Length: 188
Image (cartoon, rainbow, N blue to C red; front, side, top):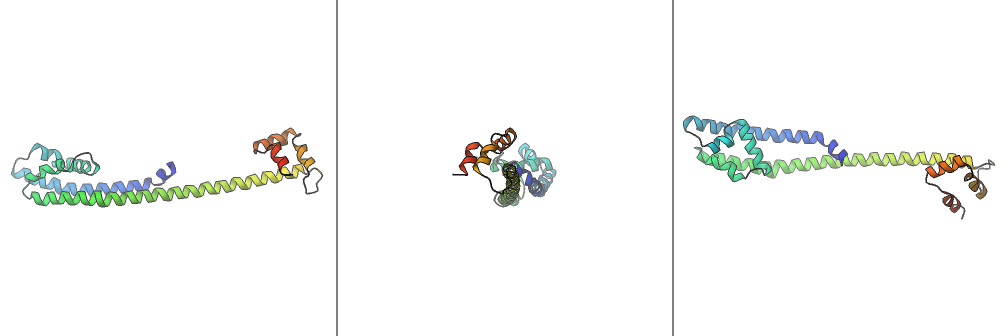
């Protein structure tokens, strides 16, 4: 799971940048509307708090899509603007596009990236297992070569039983999880 997360960090970064750009562009529209409104009339503290600056607008829009604030609370102060229908519609478009479009697409891209990273990790694990298997086969061949005391190319039960009297070979076989019972079982 850690490999999946690390492997998808670049996708996460680009996704957050895309989301940030979208919030930035919508913040420009709302901040411009409130700034224009404040030149002509006095704005309520809620309107200034939600959309009085680029930072406030971006924060309010972020809260609206992340569940940090109710959409109605965020959009409510926009009703005092002259063309309130336009800005409320724009807010609805922002919510619809962001929540139902962009965030779902970003989630899919992030999950796909994590899955691809996990698949790469599985390939690495399979390759490691194959390497260990090949190493194990080489070690077993070396053990069989050492067991074949008479050099006949065949191993007899007496040769197998003799290796368990040799402490070095016995420890080596124990390290490979082969015990005397396993070795004798090969001859039955």
